[in-house]
Length: 75
Image (tube, rainbow, N blue to C red; front, side, top):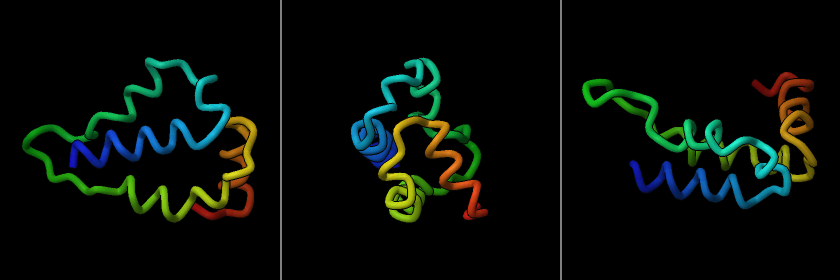
């Protein structure tokens, strides 16, 4: 699962022009798995990428991507 975390984080990072505007320390915190060793983990990155990428593909900023997802109540 760690490989998937890295692969999908890199895909998300390189698939838009505005991710470089997000500070590296913030982006890095989303690459590592979110659970401790004892907790169960769900591999949600591939699902989220497949489900939401096309909806924000034309976004020019993180704020615009967020608005594209939230405004029509997709979450």
